[in-house]
Amino acid sequence: MASGERLRIVHCVRAPIGGIYRHIADLASEQAKAGHHVGLICDSNTIGRFEAGLIDQLRPFLELGIETLPMEREIHISDLKAGTTVFGMARAMRADVLHGHGSKGGAFVRIIGTLLRLAGQKPLRIYCPHGGSLHYDARSTKGRILFGLERLFEFFTDRLIFVSAYERDEYSGKVGVPRVPAEVVYNGLAPAEFEPVVAAPVQRDFLYIGMLRAIKGPDVFIRAVKELRDDGTAITAHMVGDGPEREDYKQLTADLGLSDIIRFHDQMPAREAFSQARTIVVPSRGESMPYIVLEAVAAQMPIVATCVGGIPEIFMDDSERLVPPDDVDALAAAMRRALDAPDAMREEARVRANQLSGRFSVAIMAESVESIYRDASSPGRQSNPDRHRQRSTSEAVRSLPREHAS
Image 1: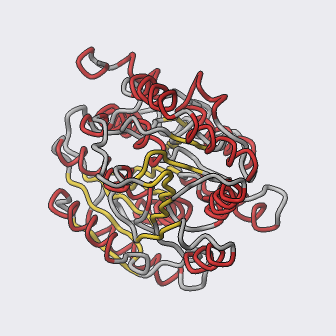
Image 2 (image 1 turned 180 degrees about the horizontal axis):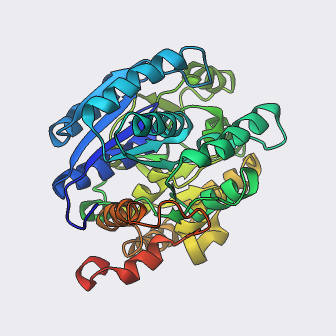
């Protein structure tokens, strides 16, 4: 794979939703702009109206097309049929690179990529966990099974890419130190995302935006709102997002007598949601490198977030402002500070955005990933499992031409 050669790149993911889809869409569109032929294979069951709109926006960039099929979240007998279908799709696309995202996408890519090699094609097999199975407890039965499979799949992997040092360390601790080359490449943002958000005429105090599922901590947010209300604090909030437990959280809100305080909304673009609140709250129990935090920080939004996953890598020296996960009292205290000291919160947000701009760039992300592709295909390197590189994006920046590092 010579430098400058146009590549045929196929991304595979189970659920094209949330931050994982945002990462793929940004990466795929940048790869297409660089002249590569790009395609996407993903699950059809998780594509709602909002996701369909995002996929339609991406479709013109993907010369190899977007193929969808039903994929189950858990390991399932239907994976055999789905895998056969994905094999046919990938073979027809004649990929030079198969890039799997999340545990199911990563499993398909590595198995199918290996079978395609036996059939005469020679795609690279790239895997990015995006958290995925790494959120499971290594002591649980499911965790032991999944981490055992991850270790097995390393034999069919050419490169591992992690979106945070936290994710890399979780993999090393739960699966084992990678036996194939591995690198950290941060998610990236476009220059326009570093512009401040224009506030809507009417704003609420707080915004939760994201998937409505337990790992994201929406119940912690709801209970923190109740604690503030019970202390006599006048407070209003939006909750934006969908998910399998949405109705449960709406019922919890009603049961706690907060239906007049918390307003639920369907998914919408992040910056549109940002404009409708003064402070973003990210109460997650687990994350890898959450785009919603990156987007909020870049947009100079005051933010209250938990100290989980890669979030401290975003906040850096300001990480003492982060709160413990699953701690209603701590979250409520941080939210109270946002209400009591809005000017200080806005100044902290401005400083934080300036620090972020040089480290999280979509252009640097795409160039770093392409460099990994080309390195993986270099003669004599692909078969060397002892070469374990864990270079962060900040290190990659120093090796790029000056015009890309600025």
